[in-house]
Image (cartoon, rainbow, N blue to C red; front, top):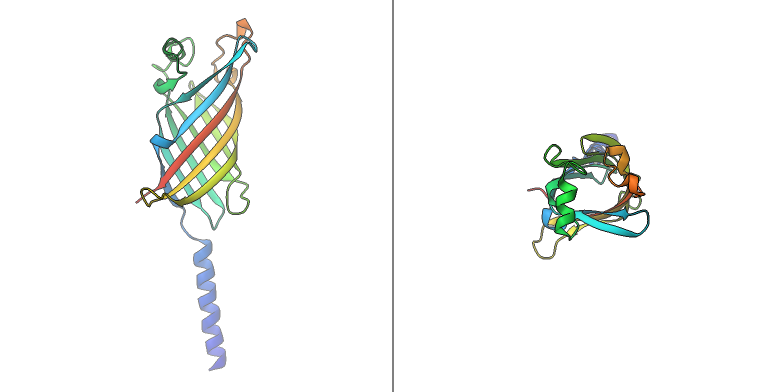
Length: 195
């Protein structure tokens, strides 16, 4: 009797352990009202820095806390680029810079990696911009999941940063005037657990 009870406990423990390890990833939908990919770009070789953001984004995040893994899939509407200066916005959308008529969206897809204390610290991903896809790693400066006190839904939020060389994406406007091609990325994102 003792041995059969021990066997039953061992089987139950194994089943629980297997269930915990194979827990399904949770899907979160990006909240477009609290997600703003932004950037800082040089003007005239150090004369000043221009800052802008993309005002319209969508996508999903998946997170498996047990397996310490996850994915990010974001689409950015390049016609919603905003420098806070209408003339610059119009120029940025033109064929001379981002050519939004031909390339209306930019996308970023990646994997959440290097978990510490249950949270990812980096994203290994790829950015597609101006029809060109290149690897881009983002550092996650902060990451938190908790119930939103206003809508009571589980929400994950993050602040991430990285750098790209825009010339690698075929967006080299101003290079002849001495514009530096490095662009700093600053991304704030919130995503709500899917129903």
